[in-house]
Length: 143
Length: 405
Image (cartoon, rainbow over all chains, first blue to last red; front, side, top):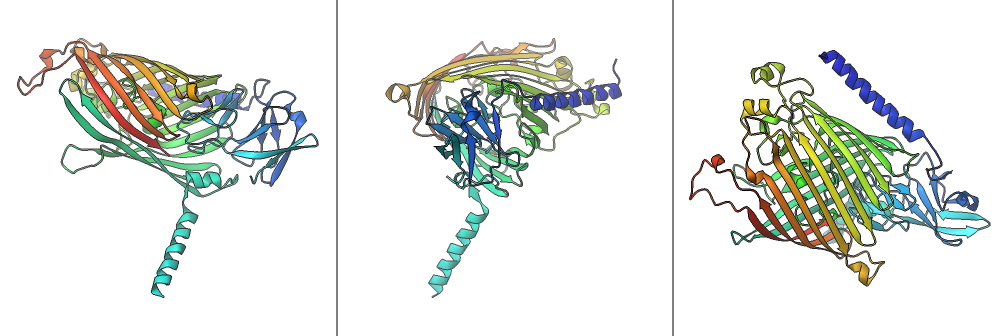
């Protein structure tokens, strides 16, 4: 029979192992994840080169100093969505998949236009205005 | 002059208040990316009128009102709380409603993909436990399997690690450690619900661990979760005297659950199955004579269609017609010192209409047909006429309102 000391040791090891595994997995990147464009989101606007959309119609715009990303959705050659990835319910960061966005905390889901497809989110995700010029997509962060 | 001074004072006071407290809408419209020290007020609630076809009586109740208060200390540390009032009022010394903290925790963001939350929180078990807002489920009552078998909302004090796996968009995990249940409080017919401690001077002599995997893929959301925790809640000397196993996982309770949800083109489907196992049920019954079962099972499936899609496919309004079938057996297996009662084997058929003129507001109509096996008359100690007859089949008509903002 296991002693209490051995049991506690095993439990602690299992917890540490699970945490380590989670951290390792979360740092992995592969072709399955969406392409990420790193930039500075404290500016008034951000320019994203259209070449970022070579791999996918979805691009995550990220500034590691800010808590939320922006998801760029290429709807056509001239139409793009820039969706702020902050849940309109409890402000949890939302995640993006190829078919939509979701909040793992309370289960809200959104389409690629930012509209709510499943509550509790009470309203759509915030969208920034975008403008195309010279092979650049400009996101107006003040819009 | 005094009038102008008073008016000016009121305006300044209002502006000061606005500067300190933002509603969720304000904080959204501010469009700020690097906001700190914001406070968010929010809430949800529901009310219903229930008509009992057997007794020909109706009950009107303000089921719950919940006030949410959140605060962002920094981009990495947040505070969340939900204060709930059930059944409209609390009266000292009389059977009445209940005030309780439904959640109160601090959330620490580790990185973009992981966070810790510590305090009184709801673990990821089942569908309704985490997502219990009235605007998120059909019918006035939460699914009965997630009331009796998985006791939503099930919250305890602990610490949880939540995250998503970046290399597999849609895959999320959680792992939590919290205080265990209290088996001395179990009541036959309500599963493990009465053993919840809900952060109120909880005995943490026992602990519990829970874990969940959640995956969003296309229009599906699938999840599997497990819980394993002690329930003796006693020091070794007391537990020994009652011949209960003590220690961190003494007198354990195990819950496993799997569920799936689908949403697409107005069609909504969800299903859940769960098993609760209490291997030391014999010892718990010997100690407390509370007729604890050694195994409970439950499952349900629901399908609905949003008929607004036929009128306007782009509409965000909701007029869903749904039907749900539920089954549970709260004494699926009982130890040799337990007594079976047919009323614990229940079937529910719920059919109704959900109307949402806009997000956050919901009107619900539903009919509930409840069928059970025969009551075990040996368990009735109060004879007729004090004891009302028991009907194995009964119907209820519910009309209700809900909101979430």
